[in-house]
Image (cartoon, rainbow, N blue to C red; front, top):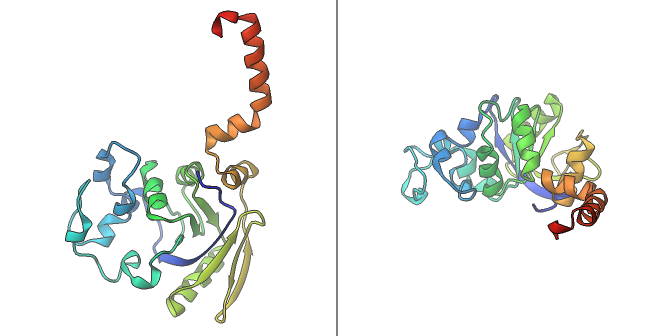
Length: 215
């Protein structure tokens, strides 16, 4: 995974509550058999008028012009701003693959579904829970001004907006193990190996002495 230390990007708003994983990545794309190619179908049923299918060329579909991912002002955004209980519904990890492969590196919302939150961490996407009033203030800024440049500093655990329109600085909580994994760009297995490398090397050395046929 790519280490996450600091990110500056504008926001793309999904101003809905209880956004479930079937909305993030509709069920038909669960038939795909690789871990790649999901980004093209992020929020698929909200982005296009026609139903989609795995492998379909989206250039032949009709986009909804007022959906944020289809609006030029939000193009290239790496931070998604969402409502409360973001990522509820089924536990499909594919939803996070779609978010990550689309280019979103961080999510800001007032709350996340637990399993979805864990899937984000395991795939290098930083989910940030902020107070509802702060999330509302960010939505207000986006509605009024479109592109709202936002900096996320994971080391300092801060979200900052500093522009001619407003200044917002807000701290966020994250478990130490999750923070370490994201800063180092390690998935769960990588983190466990890194934290226990010395003990594992000693175990291997002892086993090669005691059970020499393993060499």
